[in-house]
Length: 117
Picture: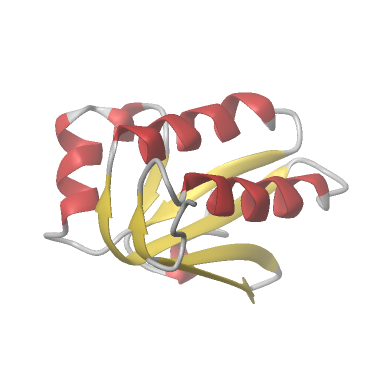
């Protein structure tokens, strides 16, 4: 049995933009939970626009979580543009920067920045 209790997902809107918020760890066991939430938010868009992924309360993200973000970007390129909201100095920020994911995934530091092109 896979334990997904280490990741909580919620959704909210910021200036009319849907945001999927994750709290906990995004890893091989929990990535499918985040995938479902991101798929739902992207599929609900009727036009091309941003969807926020609030990772400020994510303490750990592994290669499965990173692969999921890349997959969601590719899968929904025609519907939504992911904007990752991260906290400075966290493990997710370090991994995204070191792996240069921030060169093709949009990274912001507050939900208010999501709607800014």
